[in-house]
Amino acid sequence: MDDYGLSVGNDVDLRETGGFEKWKKSGIKGLEREVLGKGVEKPKRITLSRWDNAWLSDAQVQYACLDAFLSWKIGESLLAA
Image (cartoon, rainbow, N blue to C red):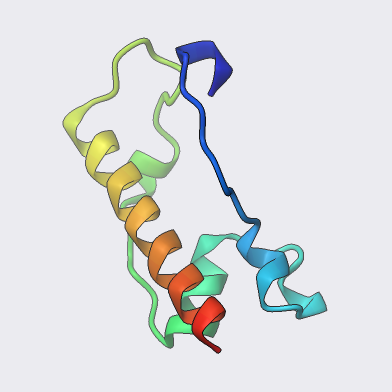
């Protein structure tokens, strides 16, 4: 984030929040299924697209927003437990 002049406070590694060893290698997809009980299918072509481009496509921005929202929902669920 430093590359873009952004700072984030109170960041949390969701894989550690639940305290489960099995989550240490999980990505957001695994956490969605485990914590929220559902998985969101995201297009592989977006997952594997060029995230290092100076400008993201609309589809990449939507994908990133979805990941951010799901991360928030997972964190909310874990912290409420």
